[in-house]
Length: 355
Ligand code: NAD
Image 1 (cartoon, rainbow, N blue to C red):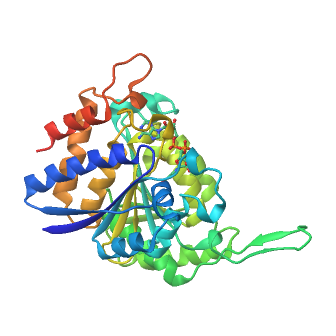
Image 2 (tube, rainbow, N blue to C red):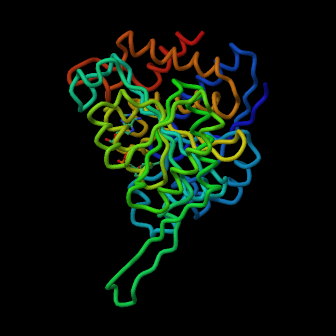
Image 3 (spheres, protein in one colour):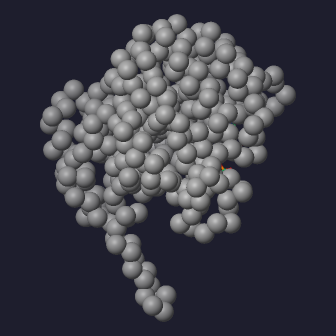
């Protein structure tokens, strides 16, 4: 297969980690007989320096013409004092809305060998963790009408969902659950919120098309509690924008290793944008010590979700797991006083095992 991948390295450690993900993609293409062409685009602080704005039209237009986008991270102290509309992070919102990416997939994956990195008790996460959070990304209270009194004595944010918005995200979640362990938990606050009652009704209706997926519903307060009490009960969680924002951060903290976690933002069809969940880590940029695994796993998600290359994605994930199980670590997951490999060297180990 031939695919065109838009690559936005971004700022800070972005270039360090994206270049390693490209090495992994190149070897995967060679093994499986594909051709990946990379279109390098500018966004974030890099674009501010070159063009004076965080998201040039050309970046958005060229991204739209490609088959998927791989992004490092944007932002850094150099641009921290700029006003809101000109900050590097604006590029992310512009890309997500400009590309109509309404589904955010955030796996909270922890290998058994890294159980000690979790802030939870060892017995709670002893066999590792593998949860996928599916967050609605373009609706709900973050995008509803905002009002405030002129004298600042009150303010309001409207939470609104249409059945169509809920149905399309529910379908993405059921499809994802079908490819995993076949269990979907829908999280809402249906005892209080009208939008949640609509959410629950639509998700239940959609479930009739997925009899092979087991569906249950949880209130968001209970879900937050269950995530720390017994996270292994979850396979896929689907929820609205704000609940998903909070629960996905909670779930990633449980795994204890920010440098390992990927994310995917999807819209209609197969197009998607793939990026690590961490930021540009300016404190370690250019030192060859950043953990590239979150970006490498983002690239494997791209193969799975945008290109339907399940075997290829699995090959990358197996290589990463093998490296971790063999005891190789970057400094962030090595534990104090333990030896660690650099960004390039741990990727070398992954490439050796990628077959
Ligand atoms: P951060 O995720 O960049 O860093 C938090 C901590 O985790 C730092 O100590 C960093 O060194 C470490 N870390 C992050 N990624 C790592 C990796 N791959 N390997 C090893 N250690 C890693 O968050 P921050 O410090 O709050 O933000 C730094 C900049 O990134 C800010 O400008 C922020 O706005 C931006 N940011 C961008 C994105 C994005 O592009 N999606 C997301 C979050 C933050």
